[in-house]
Image (cartoon, rainbow, N blue to C red; front, top):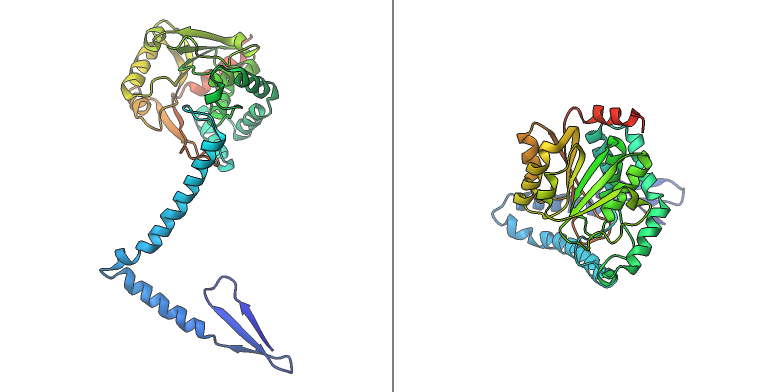
Length: 322
């Protein structure tokens, strides 16, 4: 009787023959010689002038597999989603943990605390349910998501919890999803307000109590309005995503930043505006890249610029009597 056994961790099969007495006799398989010959051919082919052409089928298969996954996700999104811009999605588990380490590095916060803040937002059913209800009654509901997805906004939330700002300024309100997330963190902190700026007077539909109690909405040119704000502890650029406009916003807000302020950009995946500004002003800079789960969009990210005083300023604000 012949018993065939595949050896784990090898490229060859090993055959064992069992005689009537129960003794095993190892049989050298023919496949070993074939595999050895194939390896020699591949090595010679890889160094030959025709190597690129010979590898085309393998390269084509790799591209086809990747594109098939992307096309599948794209079709699924076209069928299930309603969004036309500012796409929302979830992040995969590894990417969420990378986001935790990003927040820890920027804010100097303990990683266990950061993970706890993400769980805090994830478990905020009042916020989730309220935003879901508001999305269902939004006049633009036919081209918007049906429920909120936090993605990089987990990072915004955790950075507000870590840095304990009194004054947060956001440019680019849109529906107000990010404004509500930041407001939820401020309410948890027990102090602070957010000013959100948009040129569209109808922006901020999602904003409602109790989160509206710490949100000040402003309508107009962000560059003009930023010049009138004072002692900004955390600034978030999320408006017109061009290098020149983001640079103009940074120039307008810079004189009004508090010592130890934190500056974030929602456009850093596509622009060097914040990193260039950080270099010119002697700040640290770091970027987090999103990896959406089961979505065709490649993701955006968070750019962060801060100083050596950022952590000390956060600690000082957290112990001040409110």
